[in-house]
Amino acid sequence: MGQGMGNWVHVALMVAVVAVVVVRRLCGEPLNARDLFAPPVVLTALGVWAVSQRHGLGVGDYAWIGGGAALGVAFGALRGATIRVYEREGVLWQRYTGRTLLVAVVSLAAMAGFAMLAERGGLAADARPVQLSIGVGFLGEALVVGCRALTSGTPFAPEKRDSDSPFGADRRFGR
Image (cartoon, rainbow, N blue to C red; front, side):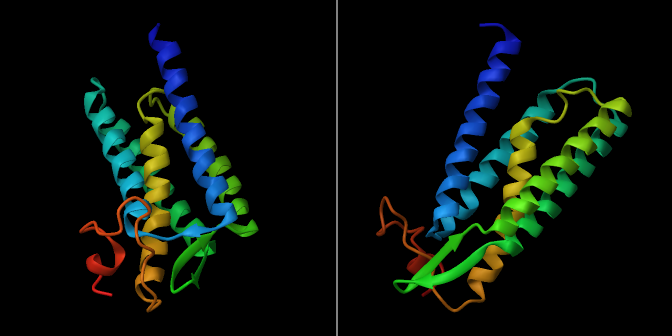
């Protein structure tokens, strides 16, 4: 499989995963700390690693990448402010709203515009990995939702797989 085909498959898989997350959150799902923070941290770390593997980037390139990451975190935080965080069955749940989707569409358009400006400014199209873009957006969202959850006084939902895990909501956050 060629390099271009491998990248396309990688992007398609990431889009599929994001679509599953969005559909689940549109329906409403229990809010647990690991599911909230692990995916954006892993995606962001993979994106940073991919940038570190890209040779030939200059200071200007890193400035464009940093600016795009900051914009992604900001739009993610704005999206996080629109998510409905509520108590159900004694634990926190989250649900995307119409405003969440509106912010997502606006942020996608803004990020596409920023990417076009970056390319016109000389940044190589493949210098900013997709996993970094998605990761920082979800990280901004997670930071806002996490802060709202912690100040709510309601415990995070236990993890689905193993509620006795040391990362379970009750033990992790002392509730």
